[in-house]
Image (cartoon, rainbow, N blue to C red; front, side, top):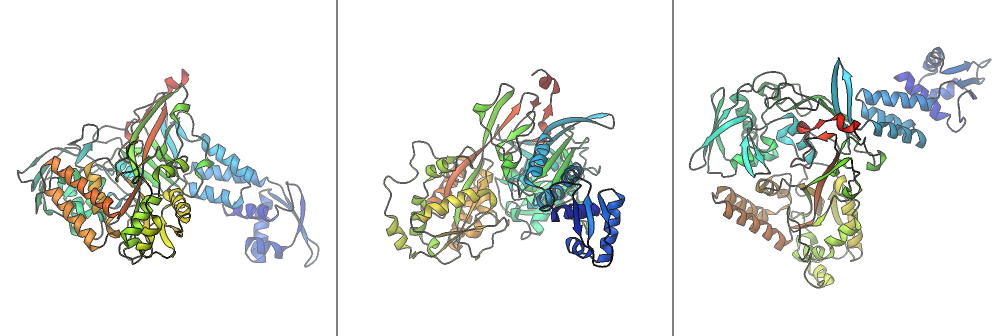
Length: 606
């Protein structure tokens, strides 16, 4: 590979002097030392290697200091294409993209992206005398962690849910909790003692059978290390975990918790193998082992590869392999639409317009998925800590105008009334008649100082819209793009703009208001106390109707104080060719890999 880099560097250096190979170029050893950043002695070794490969012709100059003549014999663009494609096939996607970024011309990059686009979607090939069905898809975001106890972003949660399982699962269709690793459970009348009976024969990916001790260890991670895991609040009531026998777990709570079973459905509560997760010298977040329907075979900055786990206790997935190409620094428009047998999802950053679908496509599914929230930092002194300033922004930020202006950047958006509630068409976004914005700003003490807004790359278009909108009202917004998971309290930002992915159930709403890396860090002590008291009351209430009423009261309090501005709700959709079966979108807005299968006969009949 090093000799390839030397040749590409040489070609790049002479690009302006030579438009093709076979052009004699005068050069000195000293000049090549600057090109390759090495000693003259090493230059001669490189030249000799390139000559042996017949990539260059070299005619040494006569006498010390005289120019030699170098003639490039190999087309550097073809070499770059060849090497970059080979890198992708070997799973070294980031290296391939770096090579293209450094050495590729616009024409070469376009040609490479066309080749890469052709490889997206479903493919079937023979591997070791067996047909292998593979789904390859591009994702324009990084994977931060695959340790279920620490996941934060929706895509990390989705990938982790393919690798791990939980004791129980929440069925969104029936809105009930169903068995998973536990085939049954018992709960005391006061909702404090829970006993779970594990299925027999559940294997981890390294072929060891699951035991009750793995369950105890997995949940104890939260109980014993509450500051290390943001989701520890879900398990704050756990007083004792006990493996009664290899297949039975008893959990004793300090207080009644009528949401506890729902919390055990969350991806955070995935069960991990004790001896692997605590093994020194390994990074479990990068080399996870679970019981899920897919096992991780490769993960680096450029690609994540999953393969079907044949011994999965619910049966082997129908899909053999999933290859996720991670392209966070690329423009989403660089790749053409994947092969028409592929599944496309708007959460996968591919535009979908159902009306444009051909007869060969099976339409689309749509689910609620994400809301954009503007959260004010109440720990920092400034106008954002004044209700008047926040109310002014509430009226300035016309949600329907935002949607109209950003239609191409948002996924099927609707104005938001709450963190998971769209505004009805008939309901006004603001009060009838715009209030006196200048008076509200003056009441807050705002005098034109910069308003520091931090956001992530996914919400950057909305942040820039807010910046322009506020400018017309005399508010100077400064944007900082920061993808850090944990936003520090007392930091320099005045507000955070980010997307909250909701599972459309009460658990996800409690998560938003309790987890230390969501909304809670922005609230001051008074607001934090109010929120915590309401959440505690909700979890202790056995009456489901009262739980929902209190949740509604919580969000109403947030709206009244304008502590959070709910901007837009977004939806995620999928469309798929009729040859692709079993397509469902999970609660994270992504395709569930376990259920997909490919029917080539349907493809041939078109």
